[in-house]
Length: 393
Image (cartoon, rainbow, N blue to C red; front, side):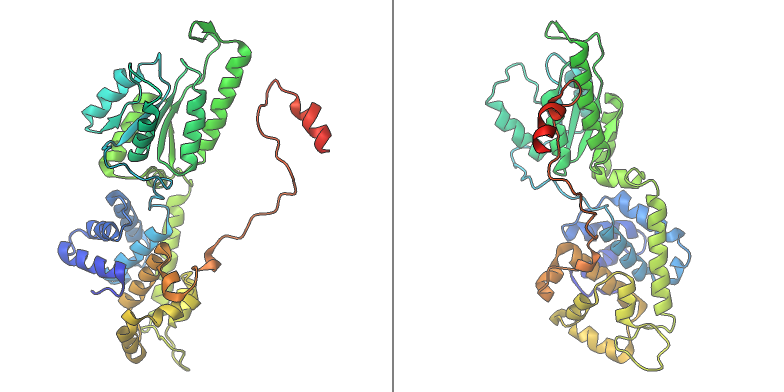
């Protein structure tokens, strides 16, 4: 087996290192070395789904690995990062303990002992000597941590925490949260909350939950021990929250079926194209086998970018051999995997002088014919009906 570009060359080296005994680790290491880390458990998941697909055993071992890698590159297994934040090397902690502070004691009573037992490092912003000067330090700690735990309990209003957790999830940070409703008997700082305020606080919590529930990088748990166990599992497997949700089918209820269908379809396309042993790189009358451009088009690879990639310097020797002997199944899978890798890294833009495969971008949604959205306070308010609507109408 041999690679033809940055990713497949590294994959070939990793395979040579591990042999055939640990394909998952070889593939995981290849992603790590190309600055696209993916959890080992995710690679194992894809390989298992591939194994279950009819016809997968007809693909050579190398072809199966390349196809699995291409599927990972098209899925949500790869983490989107940390919302553009930059880690401060002075902070070495995995979890930020955000959310309700005084008078709560959930951090020292439950969270810290549990995380220490699981050997998970953390930053605790709740301090007896807290001062405004610590805000900047807390911000650096948030940027440095891999997971942001936010507990919005029923002993505090947690208004600032509601805003913060929604913002952090919105910019792509990995968030695990516990959000508890305020009850009618709640007293905060010696003041019993009115039914109206309780209603407002719970409406705000419900709105935050609705945001987090549709965020692929967010997990909502019903209680703190469950949230902490989830975090310990994430740190043990090195999974991102998005990957965890995907693996458990929480992003899409039919995700497992959709991936299996996708893999099976690709196996069918490749198998049909290579039914004569090789794929032709050039159109030839009377040839009964597959054609490279047509095959990759069926695999959602833009043919213009393919043509330009075939002109790149590093692949010219191989192209000459393909013209003479055809493209083997292994080489077809390698090329498909490499093109998916380049698309993910935007390397094709540099190579081909283009911004990428615009045909793969989803079409814009329907235009909403409204000028103004009336957001903000609801409930016991009348500013929309009494002021905004008459003036805007």
